[in-house]
Length: 287
Image 1 (cartoon, rainbow, N blue to C red):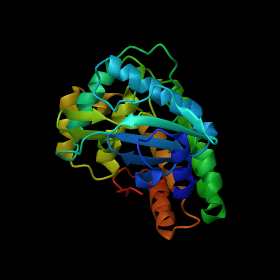
Image 2 (cartoon, helix red, strand yellow):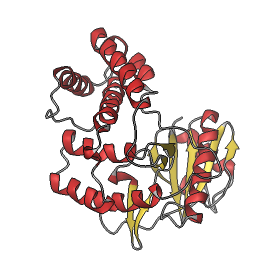
Image 3 (spheres, rainbow, N blue to C red):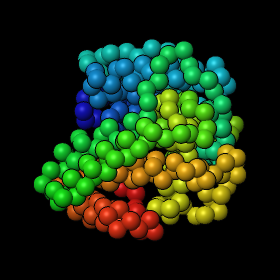
Image 4 (tube, helix red, strand yellow):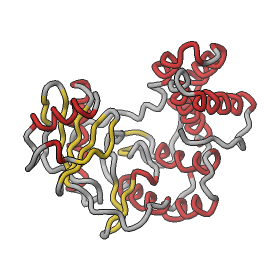
């Protein structure tokens, strides 16, 4: 779906007070995200995303009822327009500052205190995309590296299923990074609700531990995160398992870009080599 197609769908949806050509494109990926006035409209890539769009709206309503600061839906149900799901949201005010790890921790504490909603949330399937990403990588990557990641995937999937959690399982954000927090005049607000799941709460915390160990998050920033949350997941014996699963998925995700991007191939090879060597000090770079 390109921008022209997305604008045609936006126009046909009839959810904007003005013409679709006046809407500002904010992002173009699985969803085309447009802003106009006090609304944001997301146009999904295809009809397969309809159930996910419906669940995201249900999550937004549930979080609003629980008084968790998060993006709010302007319409409670998605539209299906020419084969594309369309959802309408209240636009957030401009940010007053960048988000920080401690802001994320405060919101995660609120989410992790919630009981499960009345509707079903899926489990957090970290490794579900590995096969597709490796298939997209094709001959651009060493077949031995692909086989190695498949073996890691299977091993960590089995190990994760056998974990004994420290925290009570339940609703999680699923992609708990500061980039998914918006700091408005009223404070931190949680955004990007598509990955909400029902699983081990530790999933949300391992993300930041990996950011510290692999992606250069300063130790003091990580310490502010654990202080605000009230617990450091690295003290849990299962941390290395969830970390290993996430590292495996992150390697495979980069691999899909290798056929068209030499920098992606170099980053993929750096990551796989560090896993093979068991070197947890090798810096990884966001891609």
